[in-house]
Image (cartoon, rainbow, N blue to C red; front, side, top):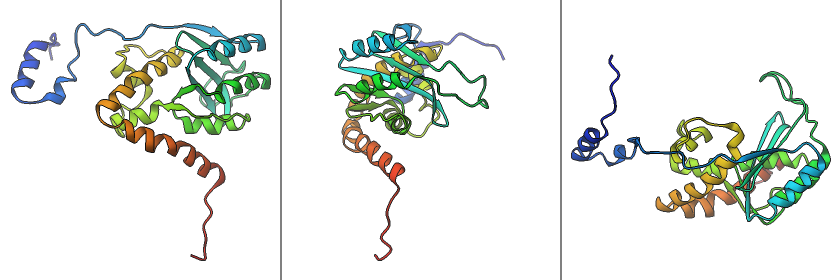
Length: 232
């Protein structure tokens, strides 16, 4: 077939005349630009660097985080206060999916990170329940308030292939090339945008009063199990 340039005007006119408002929203704009700017990345390799980063992040009312792990072994932790991205990496990054992760991130680093996760700041993450399990192994509790981009996306997109971090950033931030080093940046930006979308769709109360409280409840059930009274 012959690849032709998209005629937005004709397509918009056709969809308008035939009453397809939902499809109108999907027409890409030639003027669309990425709605975020890449942030500077700092690699934290020493305890002093981690301490300095933690103190800097504590000055912000919120921060985002991402924990890469395999079989409960942490290979990378990413943090962002909205102006900088901080990365802590294991020295033994797996070569492929089949190579076990060796968690050699010093315990002293986690002691410092505990100050962040147990603070009163808003914590923004992807799949908070999973992070609760992972950090519990390090003696860290993620204390509310927190924002779960996975749940927000699920409410807006449903159980669709589009409910992935890559797809959400493409749809709501207009990203053309997903950069794993900018995940902390994406999470911060998505938190603001998706909250507005939930409010517009009248789903924000459901998210705040039902979904968020269920995170800790489900986490506790998975950790402790469920007792059954056989006499009833």
